[in-house]
Structures are given as C-alpha cells and as structure tokens.
Length: 351
Image (cartoon, rainbow, N blue to C red):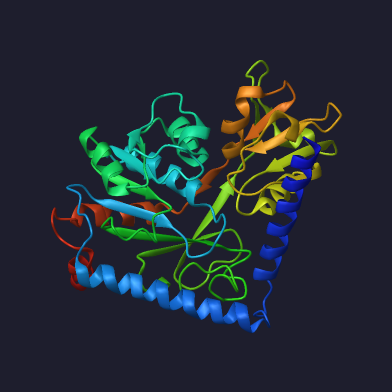
C-alpha cells in the first residue's frame, strides 16, 4: 500500500512539473522535444487533411455543437457544456451530450442511466448526467454513441471535448481557452501544451475565454461557485463565505487544480491543497488527512467520492456565466442548420 501511494505521489509530481514547464512563456531548449513537436504537428495537419479529402465523416440528422480546446488539461469545457444544455432547453430544444467517457472502462456505446458509475463510464459524463438530467451517451465510437441520442429523441447533440474528433461532423465549433494560462509556451506536444496548432482557432465559430482577460473576439465566461454541498446529504449546504478564516482541505483532480484552490482563497478560506491527476480514480485512503477538517472538492471529483464519503466532505459545484448574446447567437445558428448540409456550406453563406 505504502509503495502504491509513493508511486501515485511521484506521478502527480512529474505531471505537475511537466505542466509548469509547458506554461512557462519561453519554449523549451531541448532539440529533441522541439523535433518531436514538429513531427506531432505534421501528423495533426495530415490527419485533418485526410478527413477533409476522404469525406469520411458521419453526418447526423440533427445539429451538432462541439465543445473543446486546443490545449492539454482543463479549460472549463464541462461547465460550458452543462450551461449550453440548460440554455438550449430554455429555448425549447431537447439536447443530449456525447462523450468519449475518458477514464471509464466501457467499450460499447451506451446511454447513461440515472445513477451512472464514473469508474465504468467516466467522471465528466456522470457529472453532466447528474447535473442536467439530459440524455448522455458515451463511447469511443462517438458517431455511434451520438446515434443513440438521436434515437432517444434529442434534437441537438453537444459533443463534450470533441474538437479533435473529426469523424463526427459538426455545425458549430466552440473552443474554450483558459484565460489565465492561455496557450503556455505556444508549442505543440510534447514540447508544450498545444494539441493543435494555434492556426486552428481561425476555423472555430466561437472562442470562449474562461477567466482572465478575454482577447479580441473571445466570449467571456466566469465560473461561479458559492455553496458547498455535503456528499452524504445529511446536513444542509453551507455558503462558502461562512468558511472564511477556517482551514480546509481542498482536493482537485482536474486539468487546472489551481483554479479551484484560488476560487476558495477568494472567499478568504485557508486552503491546504491536494492536487491529483485529471480523471484520477480516488480511493478512500487518498482523502485520509488525519483530522476532521472540512474536505472541499470539485463537482467532477464528488461523483467519484460519493460512494465512500464522510460527513465532513463537501462538493463545490460551479456554474458557467455567459453573455446572453452568445446564447442567442448559438440558437440563431442552429435555426439555420439544414439537414444534410456541411459546415463549409454554411460558413460560405455567412455575412
């Protein structure tokens, strides 16, 4: 057990070190890393070109909105996906969400039930299903999973983390940008955090900036979280500001844990940080800190820890605040989607 804990801690330390170097403003000096980044960039462009020329993408009979990013790690895609689902329902739509189900063990596409298991289908799909109640389908074959949503009666599919998944045709592309870390050193993997070249941004429909100062043409987004909910549900929720001046343990297994820790400190809470790799599969012993202090965690982590929760463990869910004009623009573009048309056709007809 002790050796396993040491291995996990060592893995977390290496991941944190790599990310720190990625988000430095200067490129790495390693010629090997820079050479591998050039090779990676060639492979990415070749893959994009292959899909465009082969016309091997799958077109659904309903509109598809893709939410993604071009950097490794969390930028706020899942909160934005949840906000889109809720906004679309307010405008009379019946949205569903398709996800690869990263971190899960299922291989065959499936619709999630009311009480999904994050170990089986992934933490983010579980969070979306629990928070919205909307149909959610997971599968490595995302077009096949998306068809399950269509069969279930949805009239618009939102693809969570699908920007690089080219087999599924899309009508609207939204790239989420971390407003604080931006694009790090600007290098492609493995020299930097970029999953695609920066030129990819010129082809998306919207750039949403999560926190920080939005750049030109970027839609501002703020993640708001002001309540802590006990995982066991035996006590009423508490307002975060009532914890001001108190020491707590804060855990985060998300792409950018520091964002969660900073949000708690903004409430003047004294935070002891415990960061874990994104999509980390928690065990009860991971949260044994030898005291009775409150343990605060993200909503994505809470869905994995609820099965062995203690009375002092709390979930701090966030909601995305977006401009009304952004939602109105999304709704208007969906109304212009014609079954069978391509995104390129619509792009050429925009004013």
